[in-house]
Structures are given as C-alpha cells and as structure tokens.
Length: 445
Image 1 (cartoon, helix red, strand yellow):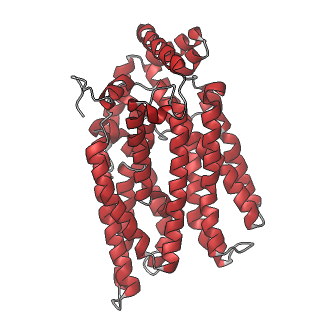
Image 2: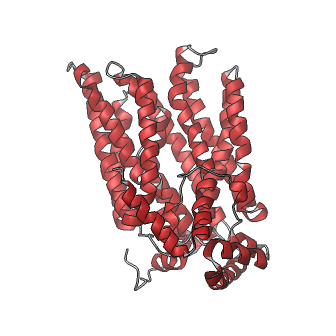
Image 3: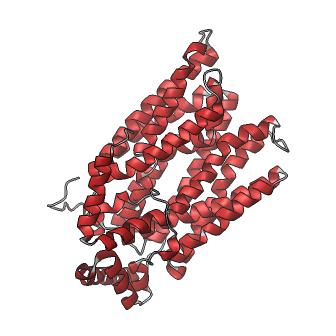
C-alpha cells in the first residue's frame, strides 16, 4: 500500500471535524475508537509472537526445546481460545454491554504474556496461548460492533488502531445497548456527547425505532440464515473472512521468520521480520484513511490483485530455488521484496476491511450473533490455513502452500467483484436496503 502524505491525513481529520461541527465532539469521537481498538493491536502481537519465537524454540536455543509438530500446534492453539472468547462475547454482549466487555480483554492479554514469560514447558505455553486467544475472540467480535454503533458513516472507517494515546475506560457505552436496557437518558447523553445536542434527538428517535423492531424480532442464530437480508449480509461478511485465509494472511504471519530463513544469506531473518511487521503497521495506519476516500470495493480488488500476483511469484521463486539446479543465491533479495510487496497488498485491504464490514452489515440485534459466528469461522479457517502451510511445507516443499494460496486468492477476486457491495458513507438502513435488492437513489455501489 502506498504511504499517503500528511495532506490526505489532514483531509480525513477535517472531514471528521466538519461532521461533528464541534472540536470537542470530534476529539472524543476520534479518541473513542482508537482507544477501544488498542486491544485488537495487542491481540495481533500474540499472533505475531510465533514468527520469531517458533524458530528459537525448535532450534534448542531457548531453555527448552519443542518439535516441529508441537510448534505447529503452538501456533494454532491461540485460535482455539479465540473461539471460546467469541462464544463468551456472543452470550454476554447484551448483558454486560460493549464497554465492559472491551475492558475485560486486558485481563487475558496481560495473563497471556506473563504466562509465556514464565513457561518452562510446551504445555505451559499451550495454556498461555489459549488464554491469550480469549482476548482475540472478544476483541475481534466486540470492537466492530462497538464502532458500528458509535461512529457515523462519513468517518466510520477512519476508526481503527491508529492513535494509542488514551485508555478506553473514559469512553462512552454504545447508545444502542443503553436503549436496549431502557436507559433512555443515558443514551441521550451519550448521543449528545458523540453527535452534539442539535443532532442527538433525531439520532435518538431513529435508534429507538430500530431497537423496538429488533427486540420484537428476538433474533437467534437461525435468523442469520432464515432472513433474506441477514443471509446476504452473512454471505458477504463471512465470505470476506474466508477470503482473508484464502490469501494465507494468518499462516504467513505465524511463519514469517521461517520463510525469511530462505533468504538468510542476503539479510538476517530477524531484521527481515522486523521490517516486515513494521511495514505492515505503517500501511495499516494509512489504509484506514484510504478506505473512506476510495471505498471498500476498490481497495479490496487492488489488495487481491497484488496478493495473488506476489503469492504466485513467491511460489515460483521458491520452486526454482529448492527444486532446480539454478543458483538463486545472488537473487534472494527478490524473495524479500516479494514478501514485502505481499504484506503491503494484504494490508491495503483484505487484512482490515473484512473486519470493518462485519460491523457494518448487520442490525444491532443480530450483530452479536453474527460477529460471534464470524469469529468462530475465522478461527477455524485460520487454524486450517496455518496447518496447511506447515504440513505441505514439510511434505511437499514451501512453494506448495504459496501456490495454493495464490490460486485461492485468484478465485476470491470474482467473489469481491460480483458479490461484495460498497458500504462507504452509507447508513445501516442504506446497506440493508441494498442487500434486499432496493437501490438507494442517492447511493452508488
């Protein structure tokens, strides 16, 4: 993803100020989402931990040694915890509220790191990774829900883990949750804080009507598939989460340093890994500004084109390196550059946009269930993706998983082109009308 200059960042910030028409309101709204999504960034650190740590553990350079198979399970057991965390969120989202659950993620996050540091056996590492996974399941399920309920369509995508300068404890509870609990005055005060007094009454009436309809509907898991709008939203949202794993995003994150060991005579795998994850962070920062400028669909297509191309090229290079007599030692820089181009392509769209759209597609009543199911699906697919990478690399060679991911990325382009709607700047009502097959005259996909 290209890095935008300060001028474009400034455009987004000015748009946010104009939407709220009050600098204090804009400041609070800009702060509420980054502070909430701090837990997602912290969870991502647990995903990235395997990249430098697994080679160290399997080489015997640490205080105990693990096998290659144990390393594979150590990578994916985090995702088992993610499933449990998602179930916890789905059951308690409308009981404890969005804010309290987000705050709870700090407990397993902290406990996970402490237990990893104290572990003296692979079994203790398994337990630590599982506990850390709980926070991932909670944050991945809850943050899109919270952002979708407090952020306005004009600036919704700019709210991602960007500015980690505060704590979430000062942020307001979701007004939709407050209305579901009958706390109308609390919801009004929250809306006045987020939208301004002049807009609060109008927004409150809209939310009250929506909440009444949702409570009357009494949604269940089956509603995801019985209701036409929910079914189409689920296909889009869950389809994009599937596409993420088709691109091998989690597998490459888990085994990044192992891949860079293929180019150790050009650059230290440690340095290459640091460059890789630093580039990912920088691009994710600027991508969150791009999404509300260019829209979701264009960035998803660009992301998949780049991901597919780089995966095919990496597969080809590794095949030539490992399976032919061609000396590629002088060209290992090519594989490094391809990996950096790959993470750039992934980060510009397919890494972040599916999670954003999960929070945009569903009504508040079905959203806890949908996000819970989506996180469980993501965790299962990510586990399969990581195990596929490990098994095929061990048996057939590292070029094989890259070739498989490249082919699946190519097929994913058709899903995005023909089925994924544009949600940029649209309200939930706009999006659901489009899913129902009714075009909003003022909206353009």
